[in-house]
Length: 217
Image (cartoon, rainbow, N blue to C red; front, side, top):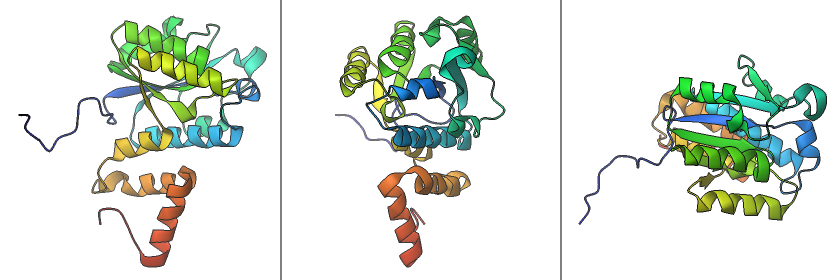
């Protein structure tokens, strides 16, 4: 008979146990993306970026052929991480760029969280490579996009079959917060949820406006 303990599971993300890699959130990549609309994709990229920034998560930003083809990284990401150097690659597989490997090893976290475009190429390839090398891989599915629903869904299935763990942008933020009694991050988590959390954000506005509600207080 197992014994219940008031402690989080080891597969849950917390601010200190993972590296977030945001891959190829660029204009040219988004033009052909059909599995998610550009407004939602940009919103979710902003949500993920603000969550990582708020909780001081280790972050790697990377683009492909920025100057010659794909264009700059979304401003929703760049504006949050103005101090972070963006690694521009020629490889479709981020994991094959030695600079990425060096950065991952320097950070030293066993959990890798991925978001980017396209799911079937620029996310599948590093995900499968990292899994094979013993990393735990998480994919923020709604901060990724592909040329069709089919391409995105088959890519997600392929990664899940080999052990990757899917999640969403809002789930990522709330998993990092996890306890509303964590007052040092409470206000920013609520602010990010209101700005980027869709219906949940509207619910927060309503509760606070109508009767001064707040989670856990």
